[in-house]
Image (cartoon, rainbow, N blue to C red; front, top):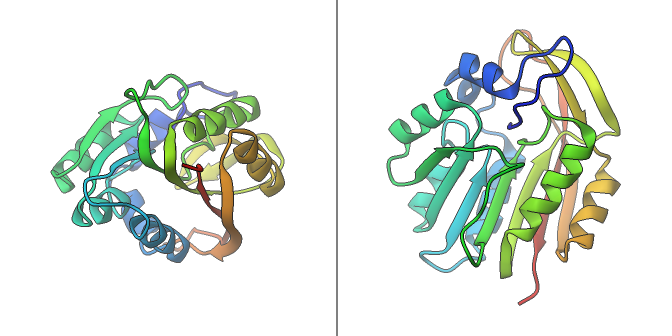
Length: 215
């Protein structure tokens, strides 16, 4: 996740993920839809392709798998602790502390952008704007793999991994509309239910989207 702005009653994403740290990797290990999305992405890229991992967390599994596949991987995350852990665990990638809402990509963008649940701890208009920004970073012929928790949700206070956070999202249909409006072709999307590891974790609905920008 990414997003610094504080909402009433909730911590910022940076505060939450600084506290959660490497434990996130244990609770959300082996998410089938994420692993399938990474395989889809890797199958469509040439060796050395430039990949941006938005909300890179601990660097696992996304950055690690993409580096092993021979890609040039950059990860961004709003949490300084997550960036520290990722640099330690995946030395073959570059990681920097950055906010998706203000990050500036290099000229030409990226051959691929992956974003696994990075937009939830922000306000709904920021979710929409960030989604459009990420889509714009995909170079011609490039691809995007996205995962999120869908729903027309704005400013919902929840307890997540022991922390009070305020979350927002968009419906599955709105995600698809915004990506299409940004010039991407959605080639696959589906929802799946995933139960995180841990005694206090409840099932979550996940939306997965695979998209490409025409060459």
